[in-house]
Amino acid sequence: MNKKGFANIAIIVLVIVIVGVAGYLALVKKQEPVVQPQGNSKLSFNQNLTSQSCEVWHSNIEQAFVDDNYCTADSDCQAIPLGGKLVEFGCIHYLNTNVATGTVYASLDSYVKQCAKAIDRCAFNFDTMCRANKCVADMVFYEKRQNWGPCPPGGVCHKNTFLYSSGKIIVEGKTTVEKKIDLATVNIILQKIEENNLMTRDCNATPVFDYSATYKLTLDNITREIRFPGCDKELGEIDSLLPKVDMPVDGGA
Image: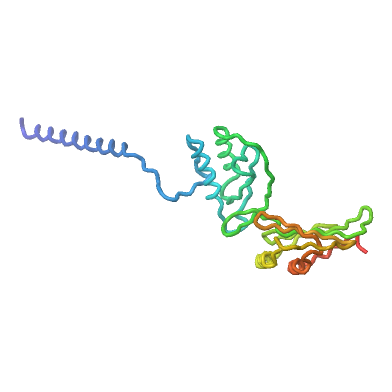
């Protein structure tokens, strides 16, 4: 065999060896097991939460409700009402607005079709706010209902005041007025309720004629009613922190 023929054979053999090695390396790489990420990976309704196991699927959804609840301002928050066939996950959740409501419902509907059976027993509060970087319900925690008498037929003889955790105040009577106080004042009011033990102390008193007032305080999901003039001094300190709303009533002497 001449030198030219030998060189051609050597080149062919070299090419075959290179192709074989490349193919082997590609096959080995393809067969390497996929390693799932470890650690505290957050879950979101913006990703696929499904699982062949209903327990794992359920757990993924519950964790997504936790991880998708974050905020830096009230405008970041939205209420997601559930109930009905979705009540297995609660009546309502508060999430960041980066998560579309339709995406949440689609994820839950998919789960329910495979795994869930439930009964609707829910009531909803759609008012939200941001506290400690979490979206929560904006609840009424201080309520005052006043009535004056004698009240003429068809007259409006009441005025109701509702103070929310966000500082929003709604006053209802002949008209409806909305006011706002800052969070520092809200915290002072909460502090006064706690320092004066208004959730537990004895506030029984003899009612007066021609006027009545009922206070309703709600803290930590516990509600307490106090009727005027019980604990009048302590409740008066709180009333003095609220903005004055001049709203005439038809009753009274």
